[in-house]
Each structure stands twice: as structure tokens, then as C-alpha cells.
Length: 114
Length: 112
Image (cartoon, rainbow over all chains, first blue to last red; front, side):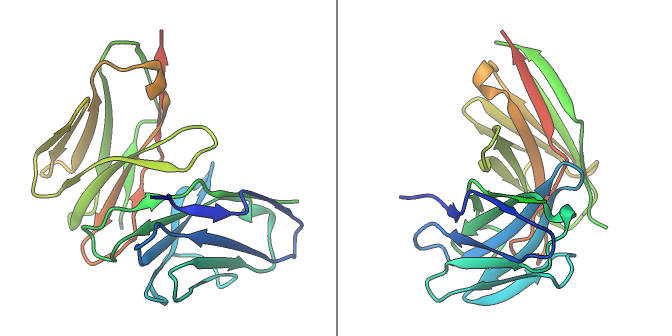
């Protein structure tokens, strides 16, 4: 069974631009969560989607948004990029949305904002 | 609020046991997890424990949970150089869905 895939793996943008990252969950998984990883703040929860609905949201500004499609694939978008948005963005999928569902992570997208 | 704390570094000799510690503050935590991250890679789920358990063993890995002290540990027996990585403790609170709260990560260095 293929794991969680994220595209692109690396991205370089400049301040003020916007970016869209993509995540394909493990086949059969319906829940997708996104995390931001930086050296200073560590791993922080962005949002969670289940059946195309946002179920939970972390403490990030409105420039960060996401969505989930009917095939469970998810995208996250960051508008008006700032230098501090440079990070590794990780996507995780699980079968369901309850606490007992294990989350499996993808390799991440490394975003660099210049 | 929710917080998870870990020591930042641990160095051991190959063949020794490694013990990585973690403390958390959320008393409503339902599941506690250990993830491993190698350089340039995502997070690999190693093991997890439900909050009503005290111990879980999985091959070389032993997880101990002291719910009273909100203390979690991961013991790796017969540590190998391939175990060198960053280890993250994470907790999931009651009714929090998929939201995981992570510690800062412990960098394990295994010397031959």
C-alpha cells in the first residue's frame, strides 16, 4: 500500500507570493491533518479535514487555508507569504477522525520564502 | 494549556539501552505517541499507548506511562547506530480529533 505522498517536495517562493501544497492520503484514509515544522516553534498543528469538512483548526492566521476533495486528497494554501512561513509542511492521514486512529505522515514539503 | 516537554539531546553507546523521557500537562490526554524523524524525512509512528495503560512493549521498544505524574518514557533496548534520529513525543486530548500536540523532540545520538 502506498504511503502518504506530498507534492512538491521542495519549493522556493518570494515574500508576498502565494503557494499551494498537495497531499494524497493512504488509500482508504478519509482524514487529513496538516502540521508546520520549524526549528523555533517545532511541530504545530494547522488543520484537520474529514469528509471534505474542516474539523479542527490550529492557531494560525487566516493566510493559511486548506480544503479536502471528495477523493480525500487535500491541499493547503498560504497567501501573502512571509519569511517566517519557511518551514517543513507535513501532512498526515488516518482512516477515521477519532482519537484511536493512528496518523501516518508524509515526507513533507520544504518551503523556503526569500 | 496543552504542553509537552522533552529533553533535547541524548547520547548512548551502541548496544546500550536508551531512555527518552516526556512530560505532558493535558490530563484529558487519551493517546500518547512516539514518532521518529530521520534527516530530511517525515515522521514515522513507532508506537503509542492508550491513557489507561501503564506499559506497552513492542519488540525493542518499551513505553511506560505514569498517568499520575503525566510522565511518558520510551526505552529502546540494544540501541543501534540506525536508531540515531529525533524522537518526538505527542499527545492527543479528549475530543481533539486528529490534533496532536508534540514535544520539541529529543535528538538521539548512538556512538559505535
